[in-house]
Length: 300
Image (tube, rainbow, N blue to C red; front, side, top):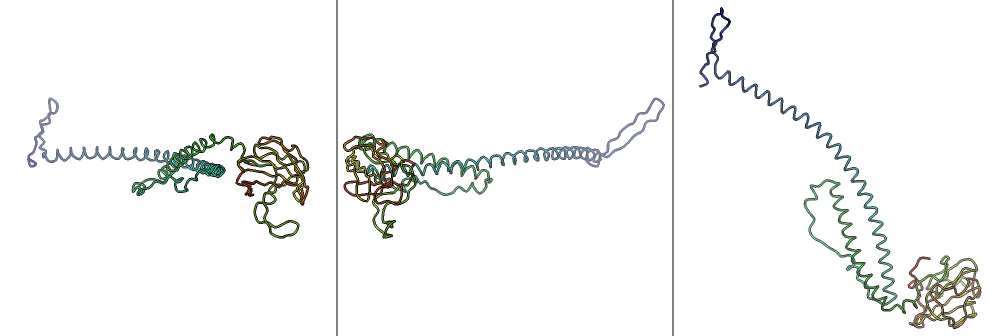
């Protein structure tokens, strides 16, 4: 077939001479194939050119979007860190409340709500922004589960507290005055002798005349000078609790008076065995002094 030739007859004008042209079939097919290949090549080159331009623009757009996402995720992680910090403070408050009312403590491992499983091999093939998104989602999910758990535990605490509301009202739970802690509870050096001895309360320093308030509901059991403690007010709260407020400059209550938490009972001073204006505050339970910090829930 490829050896055959086609005869083309060229007919000129009315006075011209007929001409014959013999063309091989292979030449015709080859020419047609070359034309097709040239057209196809031109199409591919054009498509590649425009594709490169489009891909470049899309890549630039994606990079910009990734940068924005990265900044948003960074900001979100900062917010998550702040939320986690507040969550830790809530836990501390809950632990204090449970200690106040002898409620069973929650095991630390139980609070973690641990989950497990093998790491996903897909993470190896993911981009940095995708990995960041996955890690952020995990943190959000973990905090949501922790907050739900803590909400349930606070509900338990609330139920217990409602059942012992009267006990709550009569349990010391607030700072008795504003000021600065000048000496804590426990074995401390005596400011006069320099000898280390048991300090049965905490000292809160401030200027003379600073109001002193009752740490809980109760009845004033004593208003008197008490040796080295100077002018002292003692409140009997019930449920085994007694609080003592010493070194006062002035009394604002009388023996036998009923007081509520937050009522002013006296003014800060420097009476008795004292180096300066301050309040000596004691919490006594069942006849034994205990660290007042355990019975302070509010901020000073």
